[in-house]
Image (tube, rainbow, N blue to C red; front, side):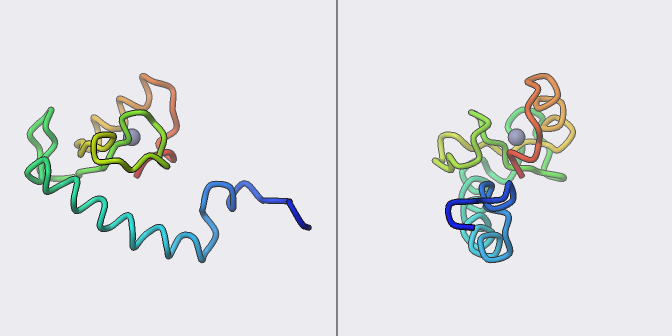
Length: 89
Ligand SMILES: [Zn+2]
């Protein structure tokens, strides 16, 4: 099956990648939350916080591309933009 990648593999969702991604992601999330004072800068909420990728590219984990959003607002933004939330976390 050389050269063939499943959808899950392409999106880094295989077991090994998920483990590796999660550890890195936990730190990225922490940095982002700290930078924004552990709250959603739009609603001021501190509960149900998701980290949103501003350009909808979850491969782009640059600090300036990440923003903590209150979960319902996050869902709304994705609905309006027509991007699946699978691209964020
Ligand atoms: Zn998002």
